Image 1 (tube, rainbow, N blue to C red):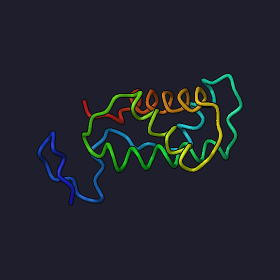
Image 2 (image 1 turned 180 degrees about the vertical axis):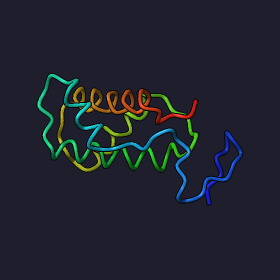
Image 3 (image 1 turned 180 degrees about the horizontal axis):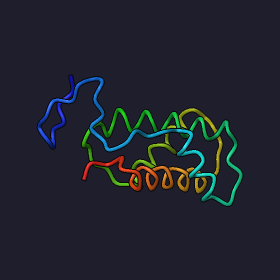
Image 4 (image 1 turned 60 degrees about the vertical axis):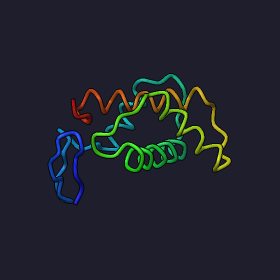
Length: 109
């Protein structure tokens, strides 16, 4: 059981406290339609996995963060894994992921 500290309600394992789920394929399509550089599937999978881990472990339900912090956390993980990618591309993709989530009810207001 998880307690949403902002609403002070129980959140059961099968319950989603957000308005909508985050669908990785829809996010990928959104990101690709808004960038002017080639995002390989391999790089997308790395960004998606790293972002998801940070989203689920650091932010959690109702957590707060600064957009540039999560961008830097994703970049740091790329460096730790010794994966070379242009920093601006990673930041642009992470920003678009957050933008997509915000536009589609992924945040609790």
